[in-house]
Image: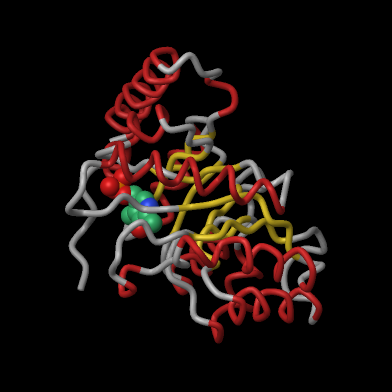
Length: 233
Ligand SMILES: *Cc1c(COP(=O)(O)O)cnc(C)c1O
């Protein structure tokens, strides 16, 4: 089990290095987040033993439970990558160091209130604005033309949040390369109002090479490393 995990991790890391080289990018500026959703905390423990520091979860309850169970591994940085509801903001803030999925002012405000109430560590919560790369509002994420306004809201009104960049998921019905090229443009637009917000969170098991070519700084890779996800409802 651990041997297979180590082999898959090494294989993905080799492919990341290859894709970075092909795009003439420095591998050191790319963070590989291992998405561990639906897998038990013991898998995260194995990953940590292999040197993994950044892990991602998309559901608050599962995130909180694993953070609790793995409290004795202080090196882990937990990334929340799922749709967040305002009434879960406090619990997410308590558990995560980074939230990739802020897509509306009300949600940013909920994380801000949780911070002012003392939820989580005293350090700012690092946040990314999730952008919707499709025309379907049901897919989650802010519309591209809302990015600057939301960024200004976070910078101007949310002192316990630190805006780091943009996050997106590639559309299901489009080649990822042009979609990630749009994301790259949106990221440049964001930097006109938030010069430090340089992160681009994009790229999953099926499209991380395309994401690296389009400038992704944070990859969210699940099944290629963890193996298939256990059955879930
Ligand atoms: C599950 C998930 C991933 C990882 O997906 P894989 O295809 O297993 O690599 C990345 N990002 C988000 C938002 C996810 O929910």
